[in-house]
Amino acid sequence: MTRPKRVPAFANEAEERRFWEIHDSTDYVDWSTAERVRMANLEPSTSAISLRLPLPLLERIKIAANKQDVPYQSLIKIWLAEKAAKP
Image (cartoon, rainbow, N blue to C red; front, side, top):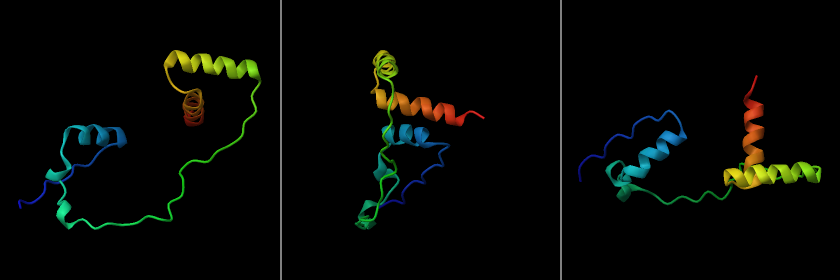
C-alpha cells in the first residue's frame, strides 16, 4: 500500500467538514491499522435547562424561527451565542 496523504491543517470545523465532503478518507488514513475503541465515559456536551418565557415572546420567537426554517430552540441558541460573543 502507498503511504497515506497528509491531512491538512484546518482553520475551523466548517473548513474541515467541507474538505471531507469531497475527499475520500482512505487516501489519508490507513484503515487496516485502525483499532476499535470504546468511549464509555463520554459526557454530553450540552445541558438541558428550563426557561420560562412569556407566551407572546415565545410565539414571536417561533414565528422568527419559522421564517428562517429552523427549530425555535436552535434559533434561541444562535441568538444567545451571538449576544454572548459581543464584548
